[in-house]
Length: 185
Image (cartoon, rainbow, N blue to C red; front, side, top):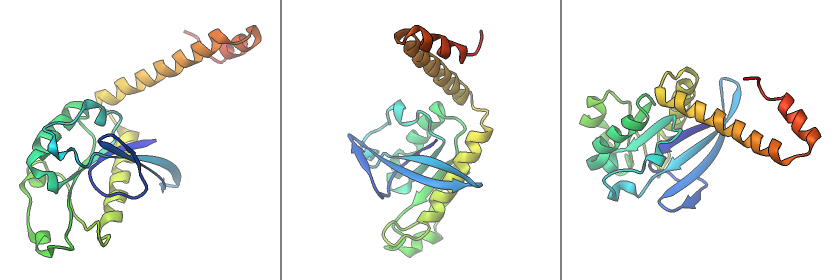
């Protein structure tokens, strides 16, 4: 499952405090994948984001509306997820089309792709998300990020721990069957 950090745009949502989650199923290279979008909209009032927002992220979409905190958030993102793809979005081009002629220092300084979109009329929104998903899938398949290696080890540990808990609570037959499926040390 791919997971994204993003700021903005609201299709179907599951709200939690300061975070809205979206689930989306799509196909990339003939393979069906489930995508979790984490919408951190409203966080612009904070100087920094909680580290849990970066956990397992495979791509990040940052909105220009939060420009004053973009550098801080980008630095934090790189601290926790140094290699994930990051895209920058300038929204509301339906209100001011002249913004598409502007250059934004933040995106240029960090060599990040910049998308001009309109959430109101849908201009470039599908392209933005399709590109973000493809970048995330490619990143996940080819990651050499140290944090990804750590997270994979933790997931394996967690899975083995859950299996051991199940083995400890079952009948002798269930335990021996489960143990037979465990990799040998």
